[in-house]
Length: 201
Ligand SMILES: C[S@@+](CC[C@H](N)C(=O)[O-])C[C@H]1O[C@@H](n2cnc3c(N)ncnc32)[C@H](O)[C@@H]1O
Image (cartoon, rainbow, N blue to C red):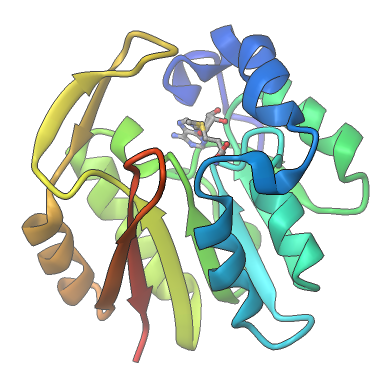
């Protein structure tokens, strides 16, 4: 644990306080864009199921939604400031300060993995690696939910100014298939974020 540096958070450590003051402190979880999609995904797990939040940030709203659904949650984030804010909000929830590329995901398996606003921050090889790692970490019938634009696309992240990259749905489908995962559905939220619903069948 603890190999994370400012750079390994893809620029988020430098803007963490601004991020936390915005998305990280909604008066109600339901106020956040996309919260309904993630809540519906979380509510479909049996009570107490173990779910991992990758690139959790301060845990608001993602880990909060998982907790409110009665799930046992774990998290990984590379930004020290995000991790400190997470620990303040969720003192009983294990979080590893590390990159998702280097993390061993607590050396355990999960019923679900969430990567909300993360994958497209990574370079293409790292995205493929993380998909493989998620596939290995999921239990049979486990579910993975991640966000990325449908089209292959590069853009500058609005908060960090760094390059983001969606590989596009066809490449994601291939990477998922190669890793033994099945893309089962997708959805779009009110902020036009695109969600991929994936299962290990
Ligand atoms: C756009 S924010 C999303 C946070 C949260 N999932 C949400 O929906 O509000 C991206 C988060 O991913 C983290 N992050 C970026 N690159 C990472 C990496 N390689 N490994 C782990 N976390 C990373 C950042 O520190 C930041 O907290």
